[in-house]
Image (cartoon, rainbow, N blue to C red; front, side):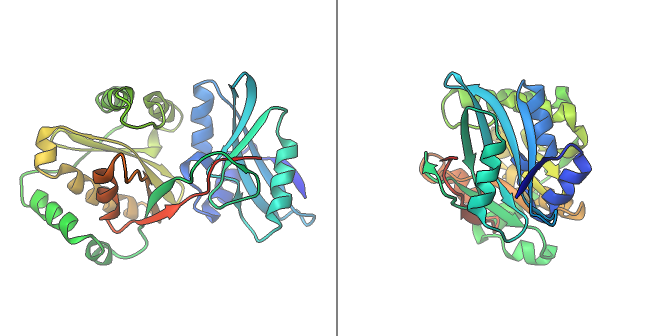
Length: 285
């Protein structure tokens, strides 16, 4: 096996689309990471016939007093291959230091955490089928919002229009309710790829999505008392599903599920018809 670094966005994204790569393995994620001071490597494993077998975007940062290489939601395997050998080749290509990965599926290595769970929504079915797949309670809440004066607006995602949403997100993280990407990361994404962001609002509720190739990711959401009372997030998410599907999105990643600390949010995501999927735990390579 041979390791090569991919240095062109088009080449990387062609491979990423083959496996509907998650956001942390997309080009724009790496560029945003650079904006907040990280180093990035984009590596591809090839066989002897120069056929790409696996890909891994690596974020490098100091951690625990050492240089740390982190592969989030990867490596991604493009072809059937000897995965242990591919991971070994990737490990050799990384600089000296701590080498961590949180793959989609379990791979050999020392497990460091419990496996996270996420919700994924398949947008390939037609709209009638997607609507029929909504849980009854979720669909009734949507109908209530649709019968009101509430309307969804798509807002250009500039640094200025993002600030209220990011401030609310920062406050929630500061309260220790959950951990996620720092709000500043959304500003970095807006800086490097403003056309990838989709910001929707209705009443005092907002939801932000990131479009990446043939898939998309729900990033941040917030609602005030008016939006909560009017089921604004149901209306926004359904509208977003329709718009993203029209743009060619095949899969929508609704993010992680925490059934213990945030059971209401977990139910909200899963009642869209999304499927829960457990990822592999973080692993020392």
